[in-house]
Amino acid sequence: MKEPDLTPADPADLAETIAYALTFNLVGKPLGMRTRDDPAAVARGVVQHLARCGFVVLKKPPREAHSTG
Image (cartoon, rainbow, N blue to C red; front, side, top):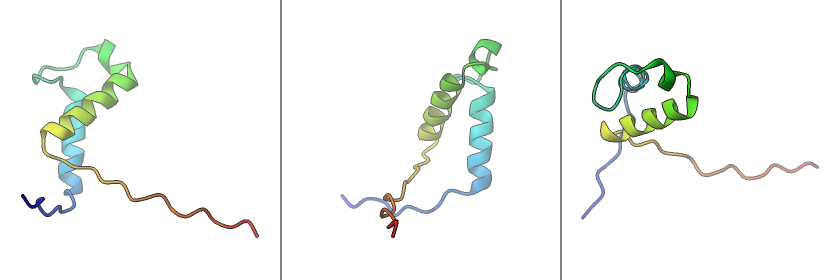
């Protein structure tokens, strides 16, 4: 099976998705203060929400080391 062609995500869609993930939990209820105060938990929630919404984040290969001479 051929992999689907990937296209860049619309930045506005990505921002909206992140804002939602930072505001609501996995079932759509507002986050409690305890969760908002834990950056690691918030980051995990953002990653999970993006995956559920079908976003794919790509990373470029590392750049070659520059010479010092």
